[in-house]
Image 1 (cartoon, protein in one colour):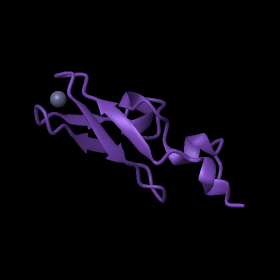
Image 2 (cartoon, helix red, strand yellow):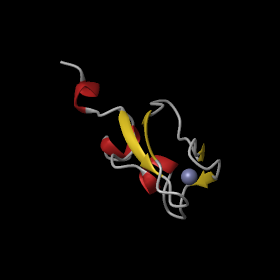
Image 3 (cartoon, protein in one colour):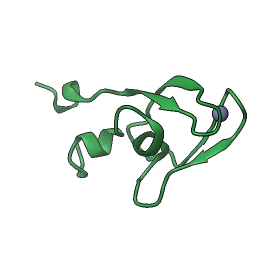
Length: 72
Ligand SMILES: [Zn+2]
């Protein structure tokens, strides 16, 4: 059994500036704090208290959060 099997590695980011939705594969070994919107070019930053842009703007939280904030 692989603990990572329950992790969803793809999140759909929604840009707060233009509403563009983009499916992105999330990195599993680090938190992505910035994201360039391919729709309008805005640079999205994680909101205060969120570890990465996927937690702020994605429909799926990032892998470390899915693991309960610890290591997988
Ligand atoms: Zn945008």
